[in-house]
Image 1 (cartoon, rainbow, N blue to C red):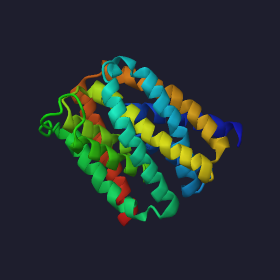
Image 2: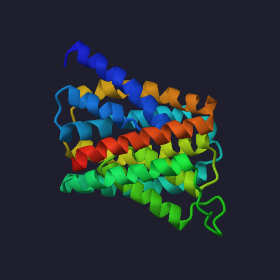
Image 3: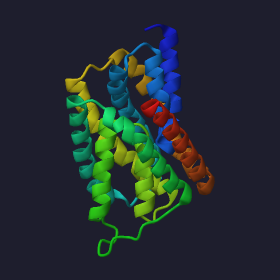
Length: 249
């Protein structure tokens, strides 16, 4: 790898870390950057998943104020996310991602519309602050999706959390970063052991992702929630259109 490619991956990582911790769209920047270095799509996908562990680490460090008081919820959702991420990674290692490539645009578009419209579902009775079955099933399915395909999994998870809870955008975003990070880390461990990760490319990308993701929660904390919802939703819809063209074109 040339010094220029190293620097470009670091810069792409910073941009991806910001996009991931704010809007759940890290792969929108990091995955094409890996392709630009000459990696084929399969190697780029597994390398990107491994590098994104550092994006989750940075965003978690930056989200400590919003995570205060959410320890019990994080523990509940983390177990579900690990199971989903492991299932998704196993599916990816055994099958082709063609099916998810066709489902992803519709899933991302629906999640983006939920964020834009600020819809809420009724809280599950009898569970209080604990996660009910409906939310746990949703988290498991998002974990499977994240471990298998991954594109804009953060947007989907953020939509689920905003719809199923009464949390503010910064608190839901912080929870999203931790839960998605756990699911992604589960898949990353599987890929590191069983798949062909390009570590030379993963290292500079990971450094940038860590730095960018650390700053993201600070921006969310100081931004207008309605404007940020609109930006996230529109970016998600744009990605859904692009993925739809790629999948069905």
